Structures are given as C-alpha cells and as structure tokens.
Image (cartoon, rainbow, N blue to C red; front, side, top):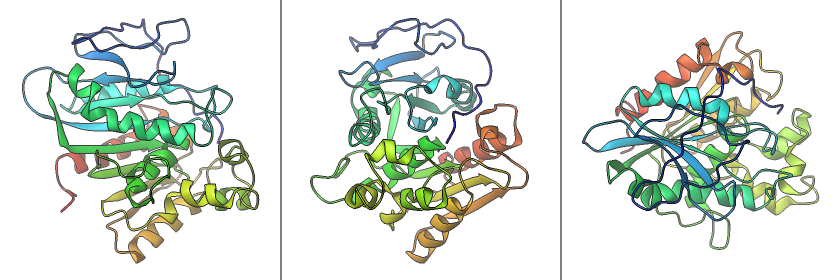
Length: 299
C-alpha cells in the first residue's frame, strides 16, 4: 500500500493540555490542525508516536466517539495528517473523533508494537482521552474507521477480543460498536500471495511461511465472528489493495454470523478515501454516521 494522497493543507499546530493530560511531542514534523478549545493533542503512551488528536464537539452532553486509524502501508513515512480534514468533518456532525498515531515500520513499529499501539490508543478513550474531554464521551458508543493499513488495524481492533491470552490486544476493556473499513487489508497472507502489498512482511517480520503465528494473530479474517456490524467499503479501481480483500472478508464474516456488508464503489481508487471532496469519502462518512446514530447498533 503506497501512501495515500494527502488532502487539504497542513495548518498551524495548536497542542493544548487539558486537566493535566500530557499532549505529547511538539516539533516540526507534527501534523498540523486548526486549533480550538476542543481540539487536543493527547499522549496515550511514552513513545513519541503514542499520541492522537481529539476533536470533541462543543457543549454539554455525552458524545459518541469514532476512533480513526490512518493508512500508509504501516510505514513511518505517513502519519495522521491526511486524516485531519476527515476527522474534522465528522466532528462537525456532533461526533467526537479520536484520530490516532502509532509506531510504524522503520520507526520502532512492526510486530507487535504497531498492533499494541492500536489497542492502547483505543483503550485510552476510557482514560486519558475521556479525562481531556471532561467526561463528555459516551464510552458505550465507540466506533471504528480506518483506511488502507489503518483499515487493517481498525478491523483487527474490532476482533481483538477473540484473541487468546498473551496476544497483543487480548481482553480489551473498550469494545467498539461498529467498524467502517475503507480499502482495508483483512487477510495478510492473501495480500502477500496476490502480490498487492510488499509491506506486510515488514509489519510482521517475514513471509507467511516464516511467521505463520503472527499472520494468524494479525489477520482480521481469522478472528470471526466479531459480533458487531462491519462495513467494508472498497473501490473497483483500487490498484493498491485488491478489492478481493473486502469481498473475502465480508463473505467469511457473513458465513460466521456477523452482520457484515460490502459497499463496492464503481470507479473509485485507493487514494479517493483520503480526499474530503470525493464520493468515496462522502459514502464512507455517511456509513460511519449511520452506525453512530444507531441504524446498525450492536444488540
């Protein structure tokens, strides 16, 4: 998965500390955002990449939360910056958005750090993120959205409760209600076999024959049923992540009894999901908000 097209322009960073919460690193490489009282950069761990940007809607009330996971081939070259315009557009609808960063390959990431960070960042919704938001988050309505490599991580978060003791992410406290996966990688071994992803080996430290246990733990398609609605959104013109990834996952999830569904977008490419003005993002955004408003609420 090559890095997605960066959309919009990076704005001046405004990192603030709320309630004594550390707001992580501030340097020239930090992705920018439009500062406001309710936009916060929050550290969820000790590593410089253990942070996220919270967009908390103004006003009282208990807000649902969307955990957004950016893509970029799990590589250090790509960060959460291109997701910021998308996160802000969701927050405009009254949704709190936790846009997370994580350790990536060639930046202290890989196995198991990248997956562990995705888990820790999600778990932090109930701790430091809730503290920073002044208790305004509805922890019973946490949803997931991810693109590309971030789609893989979001789908993995959705199923991590099925993992046995000792696996990264096992026995989570924060359980999401839905997941919207944009051009995601659900079967890591299939990605290697089909030749559409040269980066999987970097994430897992080898080929499927060399690291079969890691591929089993790291592949969302191996952790079914997950028990929540998962929508796989994919473009028919995606030449980066093969659409067979989404088709195969949804078929397997439905056979396992999950309320999964597939949304294939005719003519959409891989990078379109990172473009705030695209039909692909408009479709994904509508699905995310549909989940949040309860049209596909987990029973």
